[in-house]
Image 1: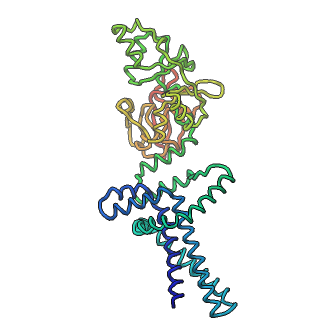
Image 2: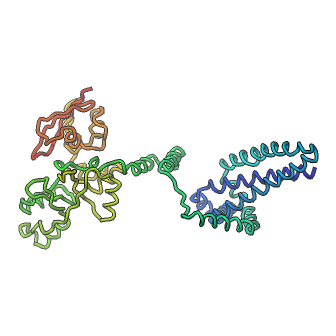
Image 3: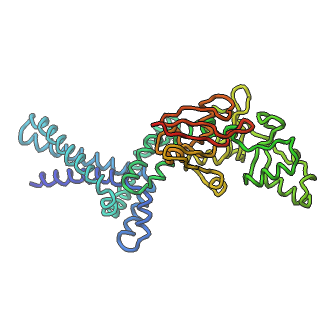
Amino acid sequence: MNTAWLLIVLVLLSGLFSALEIAYFSLGEARLRSQAERKGRIGEQAKRVLSIKKNPQKLLATVVVADNIVDIAASAVATATAIELFGSFGVGIATGLMTFIILIVGEIVPKAFAQKHADQIARWFSLFTTVFIAIMTPITYIFEMIARGVHRLSGGKYQQTVSKDEVKAMVYMGTEAGSVAIEEQEMIDNIFSLDKVTVEDIMTHINDAVALNLIQPAEELITIMTDTGFSRFPAYSGNIDNIVGIIYSKDVMEALVDSAGKPERIDIKKLMQKAVFIPEEKNVLSLLRYFQTHHKHIAVVVNEFGETRGIVTLEDVLEEIVGDIVDEQDTAQRHIKRINTKTIVVDADVTVEEIENAIDARVYSDDHKTIAWVILKELGRVPNKGDEISLPKAKAIIEEAEEQKIKRVKLIKTR
């Protein structure tokens, strides 16, 4: 009878250690820290759990060693009892029976239970675990030294890696559980996709960019700057494809103040800063890193032949993560005029998404692009007034264009 009780205790201890292993390593620290701030028993228990988790190697060594000791002890007791009862056949009987019992009662059931109730189990047994770790320290220390020695011999430094897919899976789980907002999930997805998006995908085409022609008088350039409200402008000489630098509005405004408000005294060229040139096939993640390390906010996009393709800004990169950033200036510029239920006339910088909402039809695969960008990509040449392109469920006609730049577009829903 005493042997039976000993076996029961050993198997239950095996289950307890298995449950503790899962419970402690399943808990997130954020929840524990929140509980630790509470007063009373729960707060004290949470503090003990946090203290235990500070040394995960020691915790794991203690639990695993203890689990194996009780498993071996249970098997030894069962084998000895079986031999007394069944002779030499007892070894096989004890092995088969104990394997089944330990697997079910000592592993599967307690681990499944602990996974669902990790918080309660970790807190309830926090005092027991703290005392037990202290008792087991002499034994676990030996195993820790052996493990460290083997690790040093094998070389390298241990690093726990988490794949991109695992992080996304955790975020999706958080969204389903309500702990992660859908907007946060979308931003995280967008961040992980930055290395697949090219600069060409997010740039403003050079014909749609507001650029300053250095041949023009300073007064005219200042008017352009104040009318558009942008903070940075690409500057060119004669031909817009010949970008020679970047002009900052603040530098020009400071110069205007210094010149007593007389633009003719300002030499715009002297205020110009060096332009950064980026290949159009560069991915957006690399561009973001470049902007961060070089403290830049704007770059000129070129193709493999060195020809100017467009302008890309830090705001373009951020919009790829958080979606369109619409300020007062954007709101003032974008305009949609409805002609009838199937026809609208829009400014060139209106996005595909805005057009699709207006005519209730699919227009293009990338709804963050402007209609001007779509037309230029489809035409593959300099746009002219009257040019027409067919889209999935609409037809686009250039209503107004000047100096190779699209101004207004008519869209007709076709189906």
